[in-house]
Image 1 (spheres, rainbow, N blue to C red):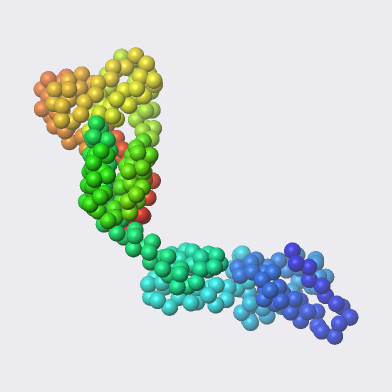
Image 2 (image 1 turned 135 degrees about the vertical axis):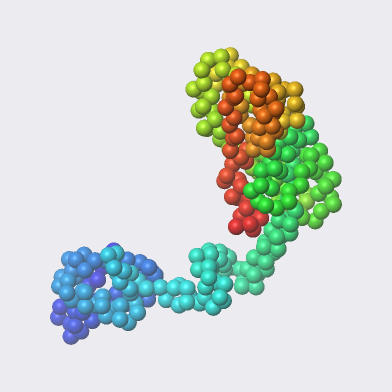
Length: 327
């Protein structure tokens, strides 16, 4: 805390001494904008002045625009000029004050590192232009041997982003990128290393996707009776293989696990007739429903059908929306 000194034998009134010292503290940035000033009680203990005298000084500081009083909170140093946002001139900046603060902070940081305004402008424009160009074409890539997981990602991204998404087998990605000047390549985090190696020489950005944690579904599996039959239906054979391993680790041989892709009618029919619970991804849901409808006369007790949350985690969806300028 700054120590204010009052000279009792001075010809200058004590209130004026305190006023000038606080004003100097503000002007010299010892008290920066939005800094909370000491309470009248704390300042009275430090200076020996009566709290009424200090309140009078604070009122004078407020009248002259140095501080502002916030009801129930205290006295704060008032931001001045550009610090208070008074430089907002453009209507769009006035409509988005919080976003404008972020821009101001980023610009101030560049200037503090030695950039000129023209250099900062070029940096901002280059980054925005590159992102816009990359956002014009969105590619999802996955290995050809598990192109189903790519199909699932495309299905969910088009549902969430409401924008066209192309699927490219990883083995064909380099050739596709040779034909484009810019793009956003999206892939499962499992494949990110291989995809980044392919995309590195190209003017594209690569964004990895994280998957949903399936906590609710796994908790349900933990509580199923022994000898239950579970059906798993997904576009991706890789997801089916991985799920079998996870469920075996969770329950060992206590459960019977049957898997199928939605296009495999024979396996799907077996699942709807045998399983007590069927888990499926969003893209497979309609196929499972149709199989259940077709087999309803042969089923004594229909299985419980659980449509899982999006395979792609919500944080990855929101990140992609932001990066593509969709929010």
